[in-house]
Length: 431
Image 1 (cartoon, rainbow, N blue to C red):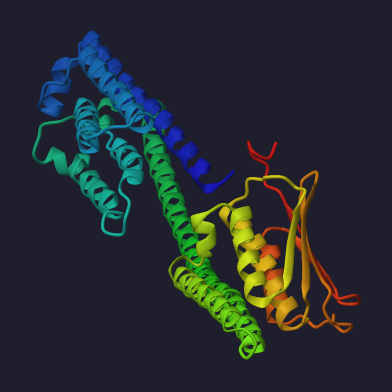
Image 2: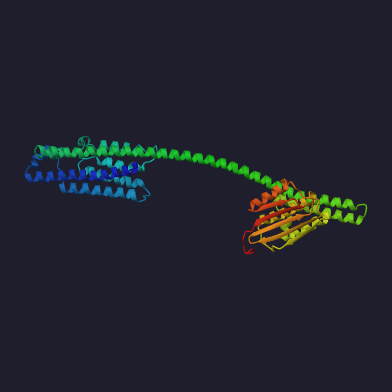
């Protein structure tokens, strides 16, 4: 049994024990008064106590009635949410006083029951000792010897003098035993209460330590997450700059090379290539601005994915004199913005690599779909690369595909071939 359950058991026992004690004192006193009256010894008894004894029935009724009301108030206090607890505590104290007065202050142990009950409602270091201080004070105030100097009251021992010898001793012994046991129960309850408070304090301290440790872990995780987010953002910016500027500069270089080749032969062709280079440069400038602002190709903002790819192919082919073809057998699919951007950038980077590194004059692009996988194949007839090393462009292709759960394969044995597979996110237009 834990401390809290044991403490509640002791308090319940104190309630039952105090009821028995109140009942015993009130019954013995009332019966003794009745016997004295019936035996004709009332005059002698009155001369001895120098005061009128209470009405037996009235004393018995008042003491037991107010004790029952006290128990009812304690039950309400423990089992119902009371808005103003001080009202209930004051009413409990009033009932306690009435029981003591009804018994002519022959039993003040009920004060200890009252204090034990209200202890749990005084939490915090500043209030914890208040019930004990009040209880000790009231226990001393309602002492029979102290009150008998002020009020005319009759002691329980005086009532028992009516009985002869052993009977009187036994009656007093039982009353003193009840009083002593009640004090012992109160001390046990107080020890359990303080122990429970200490355990709760230790648990709170332990929880605070764990909470602080968790906060430190969260702060560490937040710092690492922020650092990781910054790294990802730097990589994303690097990919955007590489894709946009790399593609644009490749187109400009290819266009200038083509213009240089016809400069001495045909001024008209020179103007045409320079015009194409100008268009590529302007589009690149727009893409750069767009990438800085939203990191999304301008072509995808102005048109759908296939139209944007068609325009890119036309511009690159016209500027570089490279034959670029697109075979779309996947049909029109609905992609998210991030998916469209990955597809666009993969095709853009592959064409750029074919022109810049592969020296190809033919690039074939094919889009296919098998169940829920869209496959992009970009094949050129360039010089190829027997020993493939993942450079900046291929690395960023792989990073983009990893974010979508896709994968990429490259082959440089016969020209250069890039195969990218992207899972489809199912939607209404993809069913």
